[in-house]
Length: 152
Image (cartoon, rainbow, N blue to C red; front, side, top):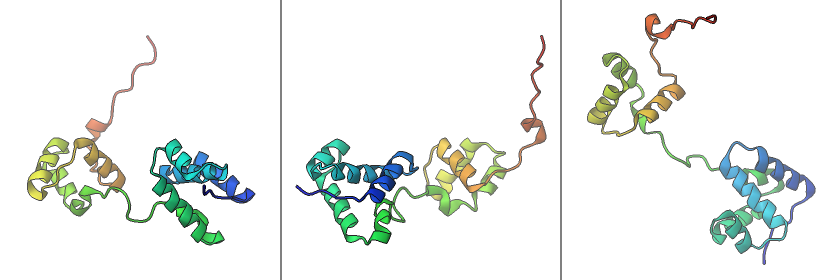
């Protein structure tokens, strides 16, 4: 039975990360170490976290190998991990397509599919446009809405 022994400062920092980190991977890895510190075996931690015991073993090995200053970097996800943005390769052409189709995203999606062979949903395109700051200024007539009268 193998488990991690944490000092008070490490335990407190892991508890803080487990509660307040915005990264789910960091929260889960922190919880694994905290459960191991409480004396749970690798198999017990794996069952509680619904992961393989080998994943717990790799985490514990990485934690023990890292020096004191870099231990918490083990919890973070490595660069390049996760889903890649499909539309980043056509980012320069999207404003032209939006201008061509008068901001009709359905037609923009069709053109992206035909010209570049990239199939994405409308929500993905909207999120990409918002994150990349690629929006065209709308006509003021469309943007302005009449305020509702407050009285009866």
